[in-house]
Length: 512
Image (cartoon, rainbow, N blue to C red; front, side, top):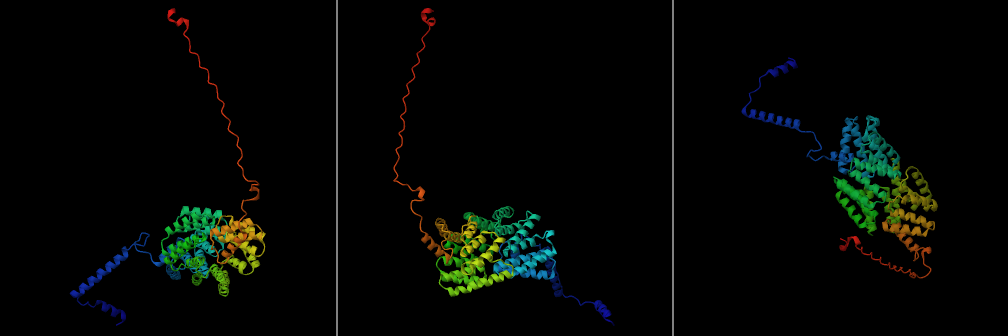
């Protein structure tokens, strides 16, 4: 008997009788199967109104899509989820764009430029699957955001304008354009793009950009109100912490070190992974005279997010405390970080130029920053180039760039101090005094190194002579002039009384 016959014979063998207990078991199993199948069939797809809370990867995807900060844990889950999915669905252009955005947020949170090539590869893969001509807007805006993160603002502008040309009402193009125009120094265009963004999609991304535009124009109160609106629009802890950090930065720039410290600490309580707030707290602590705690926080911040500007600030703080030997380590770290960033396409020429101007070779700083100015004509580049020219002994040329940095309206104690020192080198005592006073009014603790130098320079310049300018000083004591007396009014003659009319003879009684 072969196998097939044996299977047929076994299938024809009568089954054993089912007992009462067995029937109950079969019925229960059948009911369970029906209930499970029914639950699977009737369970609705997840929608925006679903009462169930979103998972970590969903939260991160929503934040990245809205241009908002995402929590580190959620971000890690999103990256793992999309990488796993794309391993089997390599032609999913939307998932490639989401993965590229997640890589970009990882780069921002960690300050690790190694994420940028990964983001670029994912976004380009999305554009290969669905080219820009076919409306792959998510990948296009991702490419613009990547360029801005690398401080390649010219490329960021091109991507943003391409999206706007194809879809003028797509709001995601405008955050890219605001950042790109600002980096290029095209501040009127940045303001116009920000206003359009507020019309299309008021929310966290729009209010953050509005605050930045207002700050650059010197409209401090408007900048604070816009950032407070951003804090109100924030949803998760990562978003709340980011807006608190940005409010702390605005307070710091106004010279309110205690208020800035409160906001930075609030950001850290809301999201302990907010390393940018840790660097801000270090800055505020140094301003309040708590140098030891500030050094600790700077080192912790650099351990979490190694940013060149934080390394420069730590080195200068150690210099101000007389710990010159210790300052060499953060200065060396700054150089290594800028080289590493350059290898991944990041432009750190402004901070490196400022370091070279103050602590290295001013001539090299001038060359570096002149090249940067040819690409990006922002107030930050203008200020740095003007300062490098001053340190190189070229004050006349330096003043032109210092004016470009300060004339827009941005209230920066650093900018005012730099301009004052340039004007001092040119012998303009009045302008020097005016801008030193502005620096002290704006933020008397703007730098642990240059703040004390500004106070010394202001004391050396002194106050202007009493009495005002020479052509306004009286040569003799003031004497009240004799004013002419008012003329007495001339009495006008009263008009003569009119004679009463006499009755005519014809109307007298005797004539009747």
